[in-house]
Image (tube, rainbow, N blue to C red; front, side, top):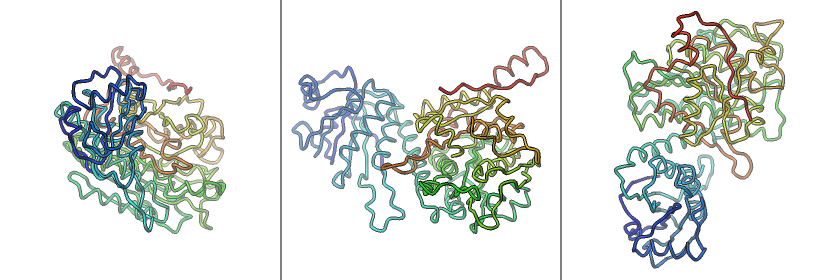
Length: 509
């Protein structure tokens, strides 16, 4: 979909010929003398229109505008969140095959981030998945013009919005594809297409290369599938080679049956979404391709299926990770952490400024946070705070959960260095504690997106999250050295040796 930006007031927007004109009206709107302004004021005084977020008044061929359809929509205080809600409501109301050209007009000068949110909301409301449909009608909306009083003041945000749409929709595409259309090999092919863009390189490793690296934990998950595993390495090189990269690690289980610890059949089809962490990494790189920021980013995707073949890994099997640590597999449905741990060890070679893994890891996180916020885990306060702030600015929210050392007690094993599960209680936290054992040499954070990566029911489909969060984090911090934590600053000031203490995150509500 094409987006363009124009400097237009209400009168100028009303003069545009288009299939639909959406006018965003915030609290405190002061009408001018033009016909459209007067129409808005009359409707408001009559009680037919309110400026509360999402409140609509729709008209067909109004005298006050050249558009075939006019929708007045309230956007509350004009904040990015309320603008997103307003645009989503309005575009949903006019969505039809007849509406191909849309104008979204801000009645007053918007906050810059509100423009980015308007672009994303228009794309989200009109998104249609078509890849595996025989006679699918694609997105009818072809072009959106964003009309603001001063286009020059928000050009950067428009560019960011367009790039985010490209990345989020790339993530959605691969998240939504059925497992037979998104195998590890096909996912690697999607990554290779990104290497066509400037500054992006892609390397794909197969079973022989992965075995040579010693990624036996990753390999154990794949051994029950006829589909060969793939380890995808993406590099965005926008800064000097000496600049430490941010590393994103995405869980790429392209279908998860649970293996020998097989899942219930109900809703198992949704386990095609178990590679949404990988899809989000692909989406971030698609956005970087358009924005071309001055930073280095590495994307690592361990991709495979988890199947219950006769050769599949069994409960009680002990495998050796790339780090040399051994793992007792008590539950083969806790496979995501087994592929991520080897990818996290591989990440050490890049001497990263920060490592963030993204995974649909635990049902326990869905129970804790639902589908509103992703779970965030990190022992690095500065990194955690940066990710929380990025989630707020991107409207792609997360919530910090604890990493107390006591949560790791359940991972002890009589037969290996650790077990891969620690019981049901605190399952999202104990999964993070498992991953933490492979991250001692680098600043690390874990995003559990099991509740936010896709929607079920009538709206079933990938959300493209947390592409927005990750991009905002990179734009704010990807070209900077990581800030030391409060404790590290205090130790340096006192010039005393570090004392190991358990880190505590913010308790979940």
